[in-house]
Length: 260
Image: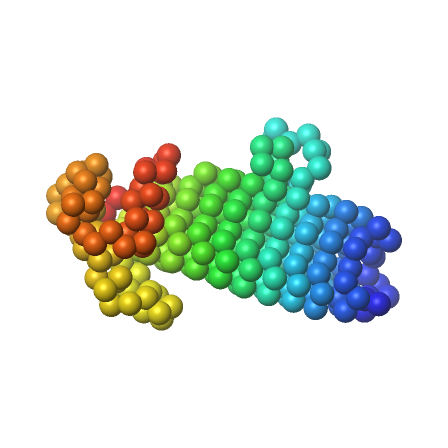
């Protein structure tokens, strides 16, 4: 049976794995599923629509799956997914989706530091880190291994590509391509995330190809269309370079500009 503190309030319809631990004064509503090995600290609130995976750690005061902060929302049943092995620190707020997508999600092995916010209809990949006070607007998409610095705001509908890192106290209003570093107000391209890529086992050849692609995109005086054409002709078309070009082609907001 789950280990539930006597001061906690857990709806009898909630589905908790046998070894879930629920801390004091925590509230869990009816339409909730929580996987094996998950622990919830004190004063956590888990609202209807929460789908929490296995071995998740949720710390004091976090709020999971509350209704979206969207004036168009009319109480439709929607969901908020949290992947296995993710840690959610104190006072994070994660909103469930709207009728637009009916879901928000945070992937596996993520680390959300204190006061981070994930808005409605967001899709956050695996191994993502949101530092203290990072805030994602509605419908934002973060690829795997993204890092967002503290007190950084991400505009609604913006995308941040896999393995990108955005510095603290930044404002992301355009899409941030994969594998790069970004920062400032508004966020600008700051270089290739070469240290992060090396730490994750990317080869020297892959890093060199990405570096060549980004030099064409940001440092050779070409516009985006010209740079894409140049990359297609002159840079080895490895999987990571194709991923970069596909990200640019799919961007509806446009990508961040060069620093300077």
